[in-house]
Image 1 (cartoon, rainbow, N blue to C red):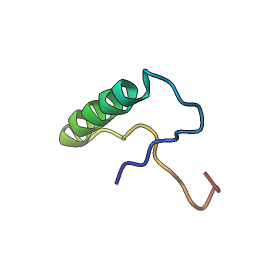
Image 2 (image 1 turned 90 degrees about the horizontal axis):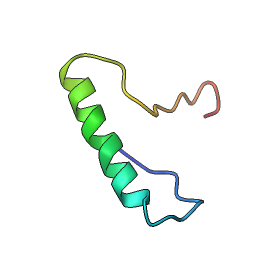
Image 3 (image 1 turned 30 degrees about the vertical axis):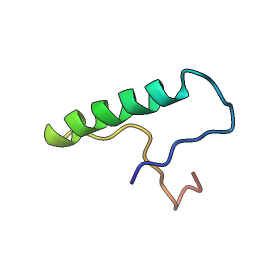
Image 4 (image 1 turned 45 degrees about the vertical axis):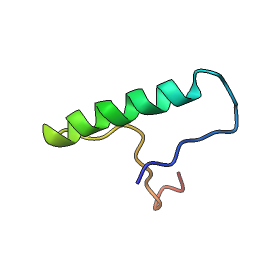
Length: 44
């Protein structure tokens, strides 16, 4: 599940979210750690 932080609206937001999604798909396929993961135990 991908849920972008959207508190700071920007005309670049959609592109940045899509870029991260594509990077994470590639990282997932390669068995690498994903960007922007949430660790609920740490509170973020």
